[in-house]
Image (cartoon, rainbow, N blue to C red; front, side):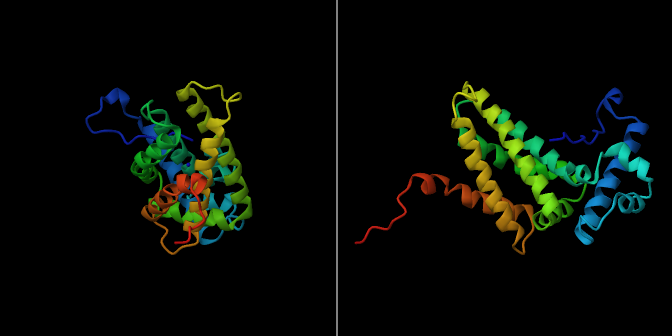
Length: 227
């Protein structure tokens, strides 16, 4: 949970709004490169896969690969950035009367299905979810993922501060709320990646169960009273 994904053209959309043949060809090439990259990363491993391998699998040249992606890492996280952008947009669209943590959770619940649909326009959802396990087991990818998570938390904190009318640097509450939410997301990602069920539904249910425990864990008395 930054790149906005392409929308599938509607059959009833005005001709002027539909992408031309050149644009459609570029999208198909990009999507083929993405799918080839993720398939190789999940089958061979990220470190064991080269840009040349990806280009060969997609039946294009290395030069063509670099027209679409600056690096192997950019290709690896392209779909994830799309999911992130959907979540940030959902946070911005939440009702202003919602409390910050409620808005974050509501945005997440709302975006589960739209994220899946957006991912499917680029690569199979199952492939995207399997790649998350590669992230957890690959130090270079995990480092990049955590670095981006920190950047994303700051972006979301700014959205929360803006909707609450707060100065982000003067009032720490936006960063604290987002940090708590992000920590839950990170924990559930790690636990989910070690389990047998790699589905989006499994991740969604696990995340919901952990988010249910945020308030009790932070404000409740953990010690059982003797009767």
